[in-house]
Image (cartoon, rainbow, N blue to C red):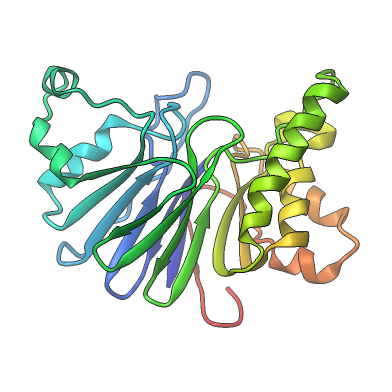
Length: 253
């Protein structure tokens, strides 16, 4: 299994029979940032599954629907807050027929797409997080499910955020996850690592890929340096830049 970090929260997971693509968007979608992630070329005979956790521009790009022209065996799993009216698609040069390939998902539901099971969690921001079961692997992508504590927000707001986050993450405690993609947002300053640390403490994940870092990859070694549990630190993948690929086996990456 090959995991590729394109940029921000966009990852691809290439398995033997399928490819999973999470939260893709092109450079230029987010003002003030230059993202360089390039989508790899995939075997057109493979099944392609494209996930979008919510409508924010750093997680969803209408461009993904154009990929159906290249990949005949493509399916989309999109959060229900992503609106795709026929008129909107036609105005952007996309056939409304592409919606036949889309499964719109709600939080806290379980879906079957082909031979793949997908469970959703409720985001603490917008949309969903994904837990995907495929080819005897379990993959987790958080989307914007994070412990969104902010300096100056106050105990009432931050306490509510903390409870909501822990309530969702605790639902993962019974699973063994092969690869997890979890936010580590440096904009949160002193609170940046709290959500990721709670995830490490309560979820059995073999490899945890930080994301949503806004191109500040120094926050990964800074976070790991503060972890007293060496086992937890070793599970966190050292991403150093965009377009990095990691080949995973049963023990490690």
